[in-house]
Amino acid sequence: MVRISQNLRNLVIERAHGLCEYCQTAQIIVVTMEVDHIVPEIEDGQTVETNLCLTCRSCNGFKLDFQIAIDPETGDTYPLYNPRTQLWDDHFRWSEDGLRIIGLTPIGRATISRLRMNRESILASRRLWVRAGWHPPIAGRFPLD
Image (tube, rainbow, N blue to C red; front, top):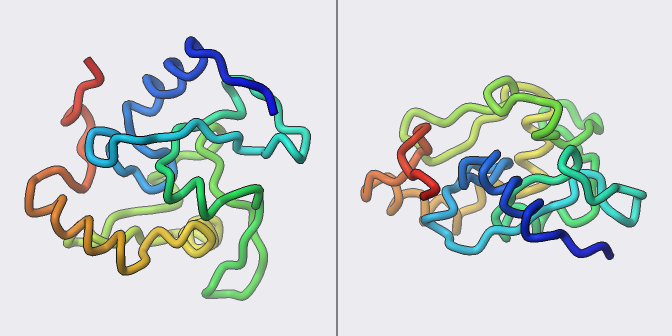
């Protein structure tokens, strides 16, 4: 396991604008974020900018070393969403009430399923965040400085 330098960690946080690159939860809400290897080190994933993303503990804990998941709609296997090569808005959108992440593609649906992005405990938290005006994320709402 290669240690991630503070400079590289800071670059990943700034690039992500303080949001989990999977579920878009703001760092200011959950406080603890992690830097994840998109391709896991165990699969020869390198500790380089192009293979790292900012993630909340929840998404990272469910992702683990998985790189594929099953689309619950088709039953087929797809790669997980890759925030370095794909755009979030191409694969996901927020429900009208801002609580659920909706998968727009097989990759989006498989990622939501694998990372359990709409489980009841996170929906309960999002309800509170919506009431407080902290969610869903809006660009520039939580400046990093």
